[in-house]
Length: 235
Ligand SMILES: NC(=O)c1ccc[n+]([C@@H]2O[C@H](COP(=O)([O-])OP(=O)(O)OC[C@H]3O[C@@H](n4cnc5c(N)ncnc54)[C@H](OP(=O)(O)O)[C@@H]3O)[C@@H](O)[C@H]2O)c1
Image (cartoon, rainbow, N blue to C red; front, side, top):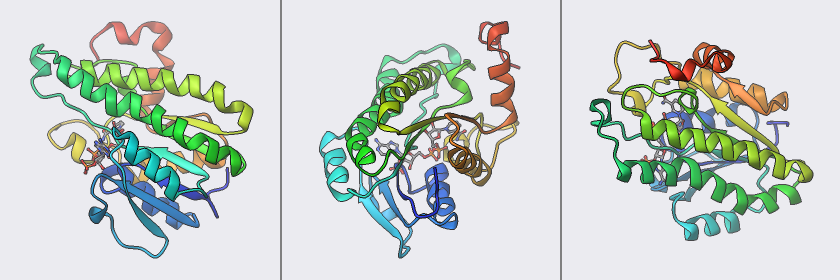
């Protein structure tokens, strides 16, 4: 799809990858970006940016966002959470699992369902869902996060088939560590820059790719799924 002239909505647009998406979309010529955040006051002012209040777990917020964005052509489901604390010691928290599923897996489907009639009415457009390299493997401490991103990956694959008939491109993104608040406490691993990751996603959109592997680790893990890479500890 064309980024130039598109009208995008980015969830979790106030920091990290979401903020990088907003900046990259504007640079690539998007006509308007709805920058959605739980607190819209945290969105940087720009003439082509419309801040929107959106907690992705609140159906009433999603309905209000749909009413505010009838011209949408590109939905970027970026908002996500990771609650790894304590889990590296084997404490798998059901509360954390439910929270991560709600935001990482269920909410992207809810926003996609809510906005898909608008995308259809505007020519099809595209939906981008942020997964992770951890959709495919676990690290110590990522059991619940990995499960939520595996569910998100599967839901994206189902949604892609479902929305093909209306001409909506559904893009799943996989990437390992990115240098944002989410990985602030993780040391000694390579981290991709948010700028590089979102550039790869925009290139994928321009080339109508249904899947974007935004770093070498994601490529390596996907290539090794058939070898059972998820059965062994990842070094
Ligand atoms: N960083 C990585 O290494 C990495 C790797 C692979 C995939 N990802 C995925 O990429 C996406 C962005 O990650 P990031 O690294 O930019 O994370 P981040 O820096 O922790 O930012 C998370 C964003 O999600 C928002 N958010 C959390 N809960 C929300 C809710 N209920 N409603 C609306 N917004 C909510 C946050 O808003 P508040 O400011 O209001 O909390 C924030 O804008 C996530 O889906 C993440 O899982 C990240």
